[in-house]
Length: 284
Picture 1 (spheres, one colour):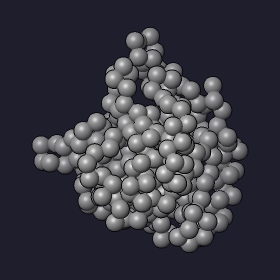
Picture 2 (tube, one colour; picture 1 turned 120 degrees about the vertical axis):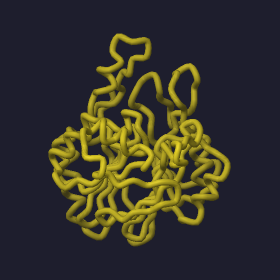
Picture 3 (cartoon, helix red, strand yellow; picture 1 turned 135 degrees about the vertical axis):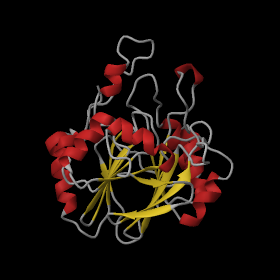
Picture 4 (cartoon, rainbow, N blue to C red; picture 1 turned 30 degrees about the horizontal axis):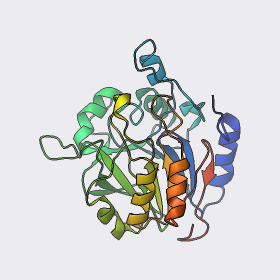
């Protein structure tokens, strides 16, 4: 089992120290595609998976979800969260055990989702269907000091509902003069980098586990593709994610690192539970 760099009380102590620095943006990797972002008095959780629900669900099946990395923190300890996202309906991005506990710990919690998934989200979380804030391709919403804009993701195609709304979204998140792009699960598709370039992305958070048909799950960018997307989109920094959570669906960051260095693309490989931060206004 891989141990996070910081976990439980040590992780929470690091968050508390960061929250005292009001004019700096802080970002932690929570494993899989989960990130915690703090800016001034606002805290955002992106696609958190902080349970063992999938490991239990697939025990004794032909597709066991054996956890590789220990959990960073219990969701009930995160009682300072203002907004949480789900990029799509897969459990590692919309985990009822994590999200129900977060709502109990944060009574005023807001949630950003793809509008196409509203009914599914409400049913899974036993929530009022009017509660989540729904986005679609190109639409935006300001929530708790963060500005979210929806960007289509392809897992492994750009899927839309009968009304033409995207079921898989990435989000460009504007905060503190910076723009962070979290793709959710996606492969590359024609036009994605062009869609991102006008945002002048400061940090791109991209999956690197790839698309291996033998896994029998929808695929993502691999490490080489993630580095190239960040480079083509003009991202000032790229952070890889969606690996070292489940043994059957992971990848080494080695190819990502090699390609980022070949392209002179700035990158940062975080350990689970580790923090990175932009240094000063509009600089990384």
